[in-house]
Image 1 (cartoon, rainbow, N blue to C red):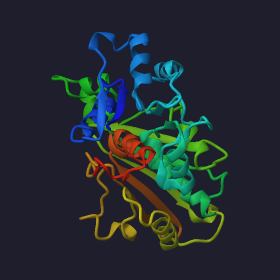
Image 2 (cartoon, rainbow, N blue to C red):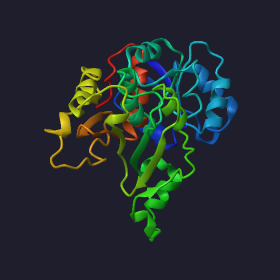
Image 3 (cartoon, rainbow, N blue to C red):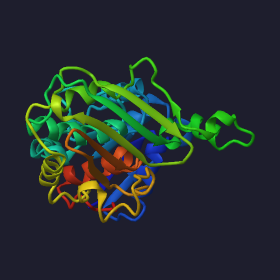
Image 4 (cartoon, one colour):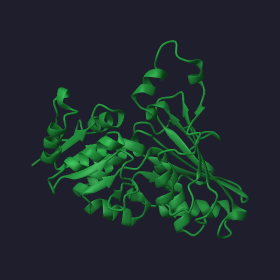
Length: 315
């Protein structure tokens, strides 16, 4: 018997990517909503309550409304919006962070899919705090770059338009007020006392991202070398299907001493690079903002909730 799945917001980038990932799966039955009724609350409610699993690929307000429309206690929801990521009643959808995250995803009826930048950051900050290396009050600064696909349909159209603004040819720094929507989960999930300084750039390529945190060893909670930090990450993510830690300095993975941001496009993979020296250590995560940063992570959570191999339908 097929599992019934509804994607509320299938027209958006994340929704479309989730739908594409289901194309070859015979174990799922996709509930479709009439195009002219996709914003009709009563029709959406029917689809949500008829499903075993509903994905919310919507703006925050619409996601909150969708949850209120769910009256079927057996319907399990995976929300790709920002609306529920710091809600303690919801599981946080990053199973590799800790076994407790995975166990909560398995049993929860409500799972909040992490933000793309937050996935890259929390993959760095959570193990550093848990291991006792990073003080919770550390003045964290984060630099990140992403392809323009993460900026939404309107931005994609701008980047792909003929005769576009020449400024789009260069990386563009945004979130200048330091109020980016991912910051609350970037503070809460690792257990930091303060939100980090966050400098994200949108760049002139379609998909893929890197997120980088720099560490001054003199400010850490205990004395460690760059190799010690690498060994901690390698142990933390050992055996993970989708989060990998290449050799120190990226040896054997990087063809030259650069970390390009687009090489994991169309996968659900994430790589954690550790490099630098014993005074200044850098940790960079590389992932697909549409994969492990969005649709791939959501599908992975679905698989875990279903109790099947988490890699089903994913690469």
